[in-house]
Length: 460
Image 1: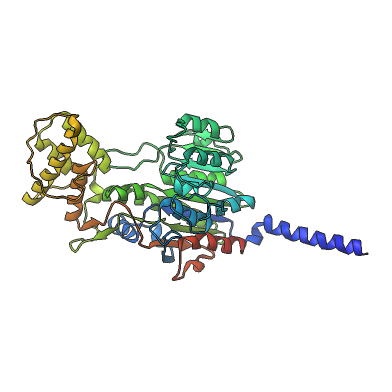
Image 2 (image 1 turned 90 degrees about the vertical axis):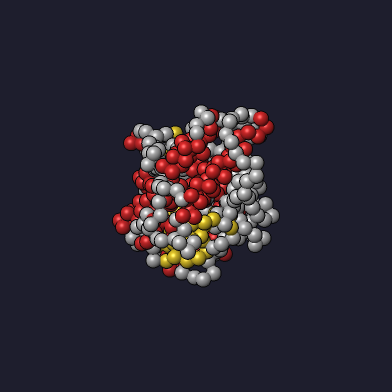
């Protein structure tokens, strides 16, 4: 009798453990589909700029919008590794850490928890797929610069779908992108820009295609972030549900460059990707939770007194500022005259007629640009530039003329930047779907996102 009771007791414990570790959809509070969108470096004013200048029909639909803290475990301004780990794993850590706590012990991401519960998992990023934000979901390493180790963790993750723009290459081991793909291809079906109709949802799939921005002078010729999101849904959808993380990394890249026109284009791409998830949610309203957030604020964008919502020329910027810099470098090599430089800048940034003061400022940036090209005797030219120049912001910027021109355009349109670095300002988190009300709180932190997803979906 005692042996029988012991057996029954052991069986009850076993069954109880199994129900926790292998939950059915009904045990997961009916939430089967979770989308986590992250716009890197996307602060509150970045969001205002998007809404005012281009509209944000997707983000406008979220009933819950709350300020969210982003500082690292030391209370300092975070990098994308510490914030990525906070969002993915629900713990604060040190800058540079990927999936490890301050004591360098591995921590589990919500993505891995979904995978353990027989849900499919997908990761998409316009940044390198082994960069900080995406890798925090599948990797564990002391230092974000361990690019090859992160790819090794990707290979072993068992996740079902990856959408990659490209890779960061490792300066120590010096692999090529093709070598990374050869490793990943041992477990994943590799696709590029085409033949997506041949993707088999029962396979593990890895798509790599440069997700570039769409500018008037350089139109996009490759799939967009929204296209990747739609394909991920097709691939991941199954009766057990899925978790999909989607990152727009260029909101951070352009903010570091203080490129307001590029930022606006990237933010528009982000909103369109969120719209794809909202369409899916319409078909599964009681089972789909969507969260959109940022990892930190980059650049500290702010508005001047002369800012008039909807009246900037940002949407008419013809190309990203780095491409404008390349174009100006080409003009320098051709020894073009100043008038051609000015016309190129005016046309690219839709500046129209320059005021005398603006022309003087732009010529001073041109002088700094010429001095940079002459450094070390690497270039010779006949441009006549003054020996003494005013102290200008960004005078030593690697793209000083393009930077100065965009700064001039921003000032005219009522925009300015605090810096080219991350700031400690709070960002915004958006939530929609079953359980979204749990995000409606004053003390929301980036760590709260993973914690609340666990509470809503796994009742932990």
